[in-house]
Image 1 (cartoon, helix red, strand yellow):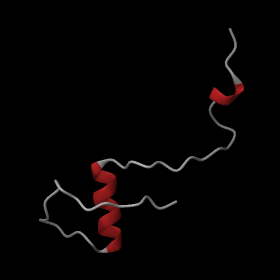
Image 2 (cartoon, rainbow, N blue to C red; image 1 turned 30 degrees about the horizontal axis):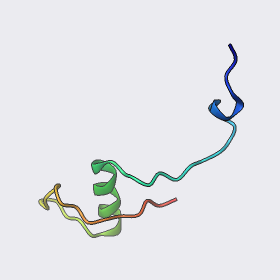
Image 3 (cartoon, one colour; image 1 turned 90 degrees about the vertical axis):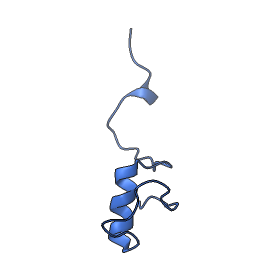
Length: 51
């Protein structure tokens, strides 16, 4: 049985994810300078993913 073309991986469509994992949010906040070592990991501020 063949796979539907829309389900095949590769080929180019890059989808922006709406939800980030906790470690991704911490890394993004560190990059923006809004999180320092020693801050709590729970209750992080909302972030939008960079494209």
